[in-house]
Length: 558
Image (cartoon, rainbow, N blue to C red; front, side, top):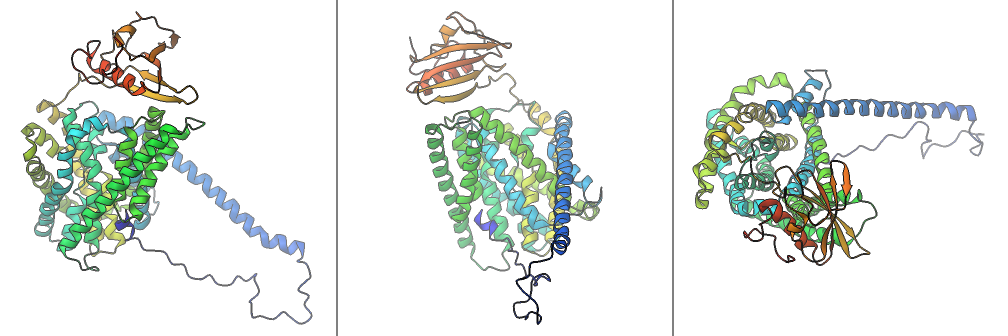
């Protein structure tokens, strides 16, 4: 985003000294020297030899870097299995890998906070893009008002309470205290859902958590950048608040424009290869971030909104797009956490352990519950929902990345802020992560029997003015046991092929569908949307979905 990027210091290089091999422009040639005489070939080879050695050294270094990166990625991928069994978010494993490689481990020295911040921003853009592409708008739409309040007024409450605790409990000055409150006030949905994969929550709660995590990054980054420049820029609080809301508004508009235009273009432009669609969608997400930042708006909000629109649009090869984004996001998370683990110096963390615990307790037991219960009071949610939302405020990569902003701005005490934030994230992730599934079960908020939606992939048939839908029936779908004729697809749509247990066949009207089947449905342009709505309604409500009032039963063939 523009405000944060303006904090970066530009590297100014000194003019290089004249090379010894290049004559000085004012130096006269020796008497009798013939400037037109060709250079001796042996001397030229000797002088070019070091350049070849440098190139060989560069290639060798590249080979070592690729080998090292591949090993780290493979270890991180295997570690996902370990984290899923233990119930701990994978971020802890990745941080541990970075620490093991760093100064107190193998001995790889790394202390470039500015590079970490830049790469962290790039990784967060990818993570936010994947989050928006994978979020279903119909699930979060009812939760958007509550999430918007939590992302603005809730952040203000959390920042205030945490800053007071940092000032009076551990003695930080007011600028450092405000920075501490702002840095740790952003939640991380990836950390939450990594420990809730086996305990699905109601959609009203997942919607609030997903929307809040997507919305609150933007105002939090703005606050951190603002507090980092308090000593250099003198503005009134009214001006700062107005600037924050203006940047959020600009980011929202840019995200809406890029998302809508991108969805329109992707639906009407047939690319020659299916693998180009994921690349184009990810490029649109980066375009939204860069456009929002260059317009002096919130690039993070722009990329999330654009990805949300694209992910919920009628994109061709949508599952492939989401799968590609998911893989890139995993790589971004692994690289980001390993880099953050490299940046920290473990032996310097012990002196800030108890201050981090005190601030974490104030944040987890006071600031987060207070913001949740106050902000969600008008929405009349049950106390069980508010309790789980209060405990589900896990912190992940975002606070640690944000802690590098005051370091780059050279704020007094910024290194201590980074150490405290790092310890706080690790300790309270270990504390909250494994207990979240237990709390969800105790509050009776886990929903294991909810039917999952179909996974529908669309491939446009431009010359035929039609679409080919690939429909996978998941295990929890109520389409199991439904006959082809009972789907009651609209006129102009038909199931042309069924793939079952590796074998394909052309179905009859009486063919009964089963879990695990994959259907190929051909539709015309006019009924493509109606056919998809009908398939989704049958998946949720079974063969009587239309008569029972389930959505998606319009334009049916009687």
